[in-house]
Image 1 (tube, rainbow, N blue to C red):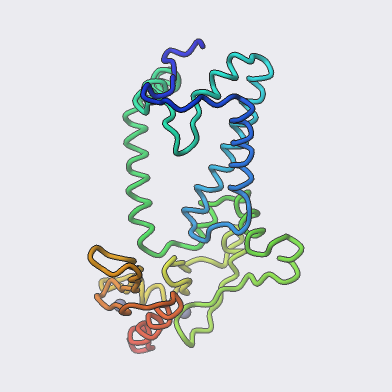
Image 2 (spheres, rainbow, N blue to C red):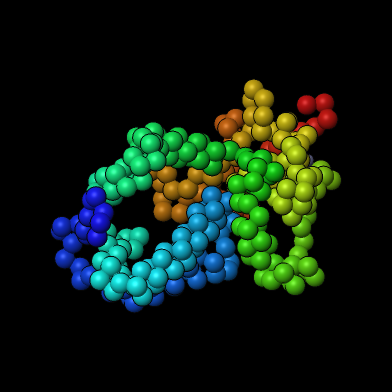
Length: 269
Ligand SMILES: [Zn+2]
Ligand SMILES: [Zn+2]
């Protein structure tokens, strides 16, 4: 290979190397698994799974092309790949390869890219704990992924058109506001000010202001099996200090949180 740094598998790797046809089959199956229904509901998990599916298809086409032109090169790349849990090439060697082959020729600094990645990871971790803007979820997922999401929700476009319910209600009991998530996530508008919490669901702009913004917000977060707890411990907590207590069903915790919100969403509140 003409690479500045040769990406050999890790030295302590005594696993037998895979052939190009074996890696091609693994990539094909990985792509099919990533797009198989049902898709995960968590937007971040969904987004990364969609990316994994696209990369598996991309890598399969590259490896197939290389292997057809030059079987030695195909075998080399197949040996480097070990799958997500395999030993793979040494991460330090990958870093050096990225630096020499991609970052430096582009006149960029790999350390700056790594710092950007670190910022993204920390921001995602902080964002995951709180409610997200519905209109931004559509931007994050993009039009291609949105079509996959719609398929996941409705099993097929036909079923979606005939039976799919695009409306989601505000979680506050008695609130009559509703959101068309297809229009909102597709960038057609209507979702301004709405937020989605992976813990409890959607809230309308007025209830977002009353519950999830301001000086004393009521941001819900599930706690599962904290250290020292019995094996099946789940409770819904609120950033104000309220907690549901141990619940057996997710819907039970959500209902208790909905009752909790009534204390803070009355007209005079
Ligand atoms: Zn509402
Ligand atoms: Zn609260």
